[in-house]
Image (cartoon, rainbow, N blue to C red):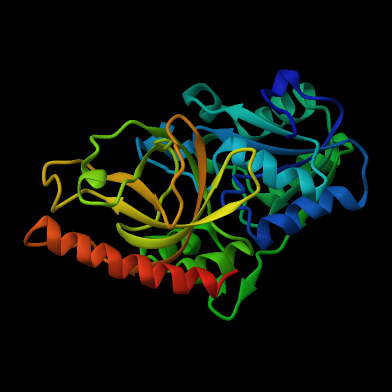
Length: 306
């Protein structure tokens, strides 16, 4: 795993790709590749944490990739460190020129800066790519601007990936990401209600900042940390309308045809396809029968995705 660090702890000097890079799609990778073509500093990705809109407008901005996940994705690309710039109202109040001078030049000693053409920065988003190019030229810093990547549906963006996940369309999300969508969590002790109807589940604690797909029942791959084996699984994402109508939304995973004590283990889940939406059944017997059908469908889906 590459280092995840604050600006003052970064290896210097840097060649940096600047942006949120949430979802790390092909458009983001073009920006990152730009700093690798002409290495004149430590290849670095620089992002803000938390998201500026969380600080400025109180919006909840769940991430497609949490910082630790992002480090795993960046390493194979040739990036050597991920720098998170703490975003607060003091930073937001800095002018575009002050931001470049204080953070990118003085602290990170940037020799090359690459951004997408829609990048904005500084107080009230006053700075744009022309501002950055002008400042860079005056300081002798190479600045590379990467055009927005588009396909036949329009601009490739994190918003499109979120929309696909919100609609339960894992295939489209995978195509946009150019990789499977996954998330991790620790298995916690549950109430044992699933075991009571013959379908024991692993109850996962997920980082609350992680973006999850829409509620429903999914065919999914499950793997245990430090174990390369993947298991067939059925995942329920949401409340338990039949078993416990007052329950809050949760992530529950049942391994198909395997009995493993997962308590306390970290699981990685790759939802492959949504089988159905959630529904309330008349009784536990009807629910158990439906889960049997879900399991059969999940096996077929996953066999076709080996």
